[in-house]
Image 1: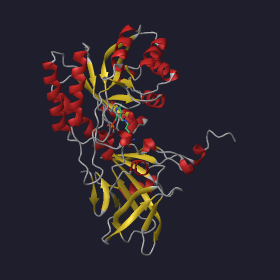
Image 2: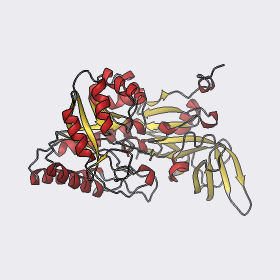
Image 3: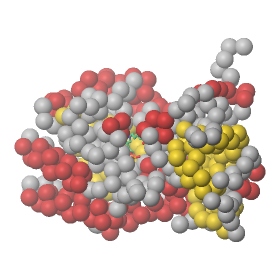
Image 4: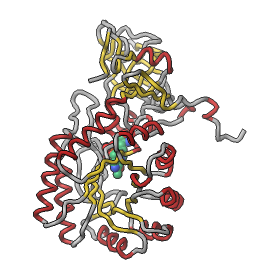
Length: 420
Ligand code: LLP
């Protein structure tokens, strides 16, 4: 645990967050760089020690930036992108496009052209008509995976389930549409079928759905006599936001998943494929903390106490969108009793909430700093300019101290595309 109180001040690797906030302003996303690197290394160790031929592609959507991509490159990670913008960010960072694969349930013609011109290593075909689209644009051979839908239901928020039968993503292995697409790929001129991809959902806390998916997929591959070189099992490995959350047990779960992969390969007399995984959230979520400054405090007699902070749903959308819960703590420890408090944002919506019924110190006052933990994934990347709010700055903290990796948006940037 590198985020801890040192002399009553919340600190990362000994670097106090109040000084960092003073220097960089609030709201501020602060990442523990060592923690991101350690997560990358943890996945590498577990897959390497299993003796697998593997690659780990970080899902850019969780959080990306030029400096983030550079860090990933240093950690031997590959990349998953889902849009021209994510690919552009990676290319600008000097990431080798051969190590990037392109996802998306509706890739545009422009995106496919851009990806091919950039020299993308792999495209994940998501629909039958995409075979034709890619084939009509490609001028040379391009490796592809097919995104299949194994029909596995998972226990997570409805908005982040993806592997079930009724989904906009991928093609079902149960109704013949995936097989049709495999055949179309094999008959195409430029697409080279390498294997399959599936992503079951996000914030999963155990290996059971991954094992169920492996079983369905192997049976399907065997029934249809489809040979694969690559099996991409997606991401979705859960993190701990609050005490009651179960963190996906990477080491033990992957041991069981890989054991099953090996036994299924033997049982079906198939070659053990190159295994790809695509963790996003679990690489960055717990490394990130948002720092806000407290402003107005309203204590409504007999009802609720509201503490307003200087950001909100423009940088913290997961609570309004998914009822996600977070731990909120003062940056400078106080010794007053905790009081039941709603911590809310400053945007003009009642749903602009950071956390309801939280226990925070009763003596919080204007100017104090609050830290919201585990905001490294799907926070900055889902930030918006709603209410013309400026996107916050982002800093990486390592042993030497803090450095800006994304500057705070300026007011001028808010209107930079406006016709004046
Ligand atoms: N691969 C594919 C094809 C995906 O669709 C996703 C996430 C990932 C990998 C990475 O999943 P992760 O390891 O991060 O769970 N905005 C939502 C999450 C949406 C996830 C979409 N796909 C949230 O804040 O919870």
